[in-house]
Image (tube, rainbow, N blue to C red):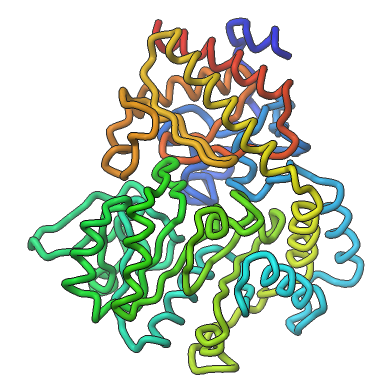
Length: 449
């Protein structure tokens, strides 16, 4: 495989993917069910996937691809992991949905509370549901209506959170501190007006915003490690400023949909020593099946219906198949205490290899990585200096698109956006690392040429 990747890429067949994409465009907006899958920022036809095993995907044309997306994070154990597959198969024989409580919900909630230290957890069906429910809860607890989020932090597609999300542009037309514009059509300005925006990793800006508006703020929501503006790692000063928002009576909400159980068994909260009032999870907590959750201390979570006055419900919440997959995944992580060290070592070696390959080709990149998350920004800046969305936005997206195609042509499936994290799994090993770096060296040389 290494020799094949070193050679100039021979275009892989894509006829089946192209045909499926054409059919999909006739019945689905843009031909996809989530926008970044459409390859709009990198060009070409998206690969339609037929199967996934371990560290690899196989597309509809039979091409095997070394995968660094991992279904956008959930597949920390690798695709089609036997324990997860068997747990789902076992649950399946008893039914697919009950609309009533079941034992697996209790078992997973007990495991999550033990691993994360929260008192109570409520399961939902997506990360978007988790974050919007946590914000409703914060408003119900505090009696306030404003929230604060950060530029480039993505918390799902609820109306109040599609403000300065990802590629949204900062707009302060009237000069008001924290004013912002929606990042999507269809979001009323009235909703956007309840969301105040600050710059991630700018503690002074957050302190100033809270000094001016803190008495109105129900919650500050943040990604402990940003993944949708590329990987951005918080500074100690910024983390300290986050915790100061509590002095204004606001709740602190950690959005760990991406980082939960990925950076450690306690997520980024455990790794970074955070003390949020509420935590949101998704992805890994369901082992790759649709799931979300939010949790916190009892005094806050007991405001949720039917215990309290804040309503939230869902037909498929606590779905038995998702609960089985989540239990199997978290149990496997708990049973492998060396896994996170191996993931970190692989990701560090990948970062070092990419940096050396780009340098040898004369291509400027700056790499941010933590645990098993990594982004290689195509810009000329020292490693670690890309700390804000403004820094990340200076990347050369056209250069990234060409590099992405060079990697894909050599059998490596990278995230099809400059502003995304890639994810390493426990089944990425030496063969995968060598193949990836062989492909990267050639792709960087192609980019220079």
